[in-house]
Amino acid sequence: MKNILQKLIRGTHVALCCQDLPEKLAIYFHSIDQSEIGAFMETISYFLEQGYEFCDPNAFCVQQSSRAIFLSFDDNHRSWLEIAEILRRYGVRATFYVNTCVLHSRCAASEIAAYYDRIASYRARTPLSATDIAHLVAAGHILGSHGRSHQMLTRLPLPQAREEIRQGKAELEDLLGTPVLHFSFPYGMRRHFCEKLRSYCFELGFRTVASAIPGMQHCRQTAACIYRSPWRLGKSREYNLDNLRVDGTFFERLTGRSAVG
Image (cartoon, rainbow, N blue to C red):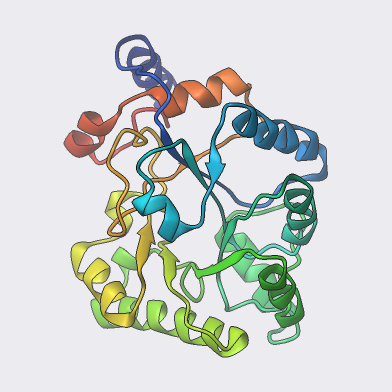
């Protein structure tokens, strides 16, 4: 019943609330399976052919005059190294938002398994090492924080949620030796975050905070909230483009749910 309702809501929005593709887009992925590499490359090629410039978070928030796209990845997957090599061929930079609790060689196999169970990732379940993270930075990519251990922050007491954010930032900064300026909150919907935590992020020194609410690409992108949409490689390009074209802002504000699932 839930899936049927979601399809009905999406179909109605595609029929009635589609606009032109926004000049500014923010899309994100998690891990990418080997079988999806071809579709991923086609996606990158498509946006380059359409005249979109891939931007880091700071440039994306202030870009005004041309087509801009913000590409990012969430969680902690060693398979990102292969993605980084593909991006190198296209001259594209991405932002990788990392959970630090499972850095390879720093925790037990049971902790790694528990982490991937928590985020429902059943593909290659190997996390990044400190060396891998350094490699991503050396390749020109941005490393941001996704919290320490991918907790649903609004289910935690406020002091514990704040500490989850602080520790993730501090541990990543310890590895990089430079300030970490960008944050995406786990699970990504409005109900998974709050204004007190957003304010705390800026107190800590983050410059941008990213959500992951589909159907919000027509919102104004700001440092206070970069609105990202998932690009589903198992779906057609047109399906994904429709999700970016839909203006689901009113529905999300009314219900707290995404108009396109």
